[in-house]
Amino acid sequence: MAYDVVVIGSGPGGYVCAIKAAQLGLKVAVVEKRETFGGTCLNIGCIPSKALLHASEMFSEAGHSFDTLGVEVQPKLNLKKMMAHKDTTVSANVNGVAFLFKKNKIDAFRGTGKVLGAGKVSVTGEDGKSQEIEAKNIVIATGSEVAGIPGVKVDIDEKVIVSSTGALSLAKVPGKLIVVGGGVIGLELGSVWARLGAKVTVVEFLDSILGGMDGEVAKQFQRLLSKQGFEFKLGSKVTAVAKGKKGASVTFEPVKGGAAETIEADVVLVATGRRAYADNLGLKEAGVEVDERGRVKTDGHLQTNVPGIWAIGDVIAGPMLAHKAEDEGVAVAERIAGQAGHVNYDVIPSVVYTSPEVASVGKTEEELKKAGVDYKAGKFPFTANGRARAMLHTDGFVKILADKKTDKVLGVHILGFGAGEMIHEAAVLMEFGGSSEDLARTCHAHPTMSEAVKEAALATFFKPIHI
Image: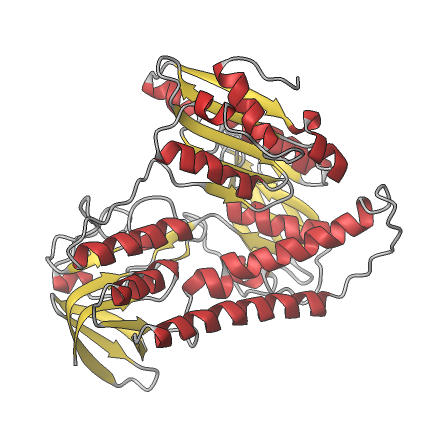
């Protein structure tokens, strides 16, 4: 059978692309090598990690904040139940994707996909047997995989030395946990186990955590994590990760030079980023170009150099975010259907789901300074927000960056409880080219955490009211 579109990979980018294409009247098939749909995100990434982040946050609040609120309890951890909640959440999501495929009459082929050239894909099942599928358009949506530590051989057994996959399924709370990498994945999973009782040490190559985030936000966030018990070894280059009799050790040395140091822990989490998964796809043989980092090259419309072959998500350049992949999936489906699909890469929010959360959209102060943009900044702390005080969530602040001449908002950064939900009014504002005054003059319900966003906007174009 010939298809209008064959999507290789059913992660957020792939499954959204397939559904959108089917909604637009195209005949669609999906190739997936896992037993379940949803890719890394739904199976061993975004969804299970958020289930554990929420559960561990509730456990932590019960042990620390409830008493102040007049709720006297003595929480007891049942890790098995917590993991069952995670598994149930994952199951509901992946089954939901399967239902949507069926609803939209999308055919699924189980096995490993390979591009044979324009218009042809082979699918090899676990039994080693292959079949060919014909398609007018092929969408590569194979995502990414754990990158490891550059120049360091690491034996990840997913029990003592783990990737994000193993860190989501530890059999018990480690007494000590070393996280190699101070990015989003390492800090989120480190937070889960820190709340449940682990002593967490983060070893990071850069001089700051959350590389690429707004510097002021990153510094204050690090201080808050330190208060929660995190220890940081910044500016440190890892030279070895070794498994021992009772755990594992990490050896590192100062990036700027100095003596090496070795620390031991029950579990080591390697969270140094991810790399595009483009191996064994037959890209070279099909003539599809890749860049120096192994990512599939695409033009401004997400098409490769081979007509009819497209690529989206983690396998191409850009932030490795599920929602970025989703938007690209929609754009590709629309372009295949003859519409004008487009992704605005200047307005893609990013969230760190720790406690408190970190959320941002648009440019950082560092980026604006480097570009020579004349800007103004407005800030408002949650300590001055009534709802935040009532909920005992006064950590953090909102910062808005706007063009000094036009007042057009260029970036918004939030450190605080619920930041991941609050960031979207900034995203909508920026999508329409709005100003800080537009936001400041928009009525916000009282009392809400979102009033801090309004106050930061007031501070940007004139003066805040409540500070």
